[in-house]
Amino acid sequence: MTKENYFLVSTKYFVAFCLLCLVTIYFLLVPRYMIFNLDDAWTTSLIYNYYHHNELTDIVFEGPGLLQFGRVHAYLYGVILSFFDYRWESSLYFSMLLVIVALIVTYITLIKLGFNNEVAMVSILILMAMEPVIAIAHTARPDALNFLLITLIILCWSLKKPLLSGLLFGLGATIHPMFVMAIPYIISVTVYQYIIKDIIKVDLKKIILFFLIGTSISFSLYVITHWHELYNTLNVINNSSKRFSLDIFIKYYLEAKFFRHLPGLGILVITTFLSVYAIRRGSDRFLTYECLYALIALVLVILSLILIGRDNHYYMVYLMPALSLQITLVVYSMIKSLVH
Image (tube, rainbow, N blue to C red):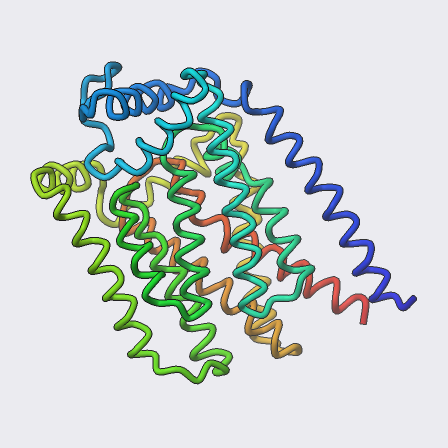
């Protein structure tokens, strides 16, 4: 067995072992992670009132919450909670299931985009171990469902199913406003497939047109069913965000308890510099393309979060797929150079 083959086989066994450990940890954390999370209190209250009474309020804060754009989330979680007699942890297990499915969808997307199996597996493993992903997997908030929706939108786009991708994108309006975070990944995939690799001989204008048609159809259904709430919805979105704000990064990286996210900031900065170096060196053409894709996605997501300006730390989860891929590619390129 060659040194490279031995490395690949060892990597597969190591990833399988780590994956088993992480899944076990996810299950064990369900009744223990953020057990006094106030968001879960008002979210499950809101779900109960909508599912049983069709009311747009919760009994904790007596406010409209997210139901202007959260009916799909409220109904799905209402079904789960009512089936299990409103045991709180049942919603958390459901969120965990949604996140695991989203990770599988992300893995499939990477394979369809041409990334090798080892890079895709390790990237998903790192993504699964990141705190923002663990956080949305253990809360009843709509972030897990929204994260899954975004991964499905990106998968459909990468498979040249723009109409279906657009339909799902418009559906995001009924889940959470942060469905728009699919846009930076759609742009990244488009640049990667059509410009960088130049291997997809399809009319890009036609693809975009079908995506817009799909979005228009599903978003029109949202407008028809929510027309009397549109004004309040726009006010909620507008009042909860600051335009062009770094608050989310300051809060997440610099104000977290015990400064536990500072190493993550260091990893972000270091891997970005190493990724730029690998791209400039360009010794492996395909690896250069892949590093460029991860870097474009990372930059676009950061700019999008700054533009939105919402300082909710849960939204950092949308940065993690690009960051985990960048970390994996940087480490992979270093190991590959050492092996050869």
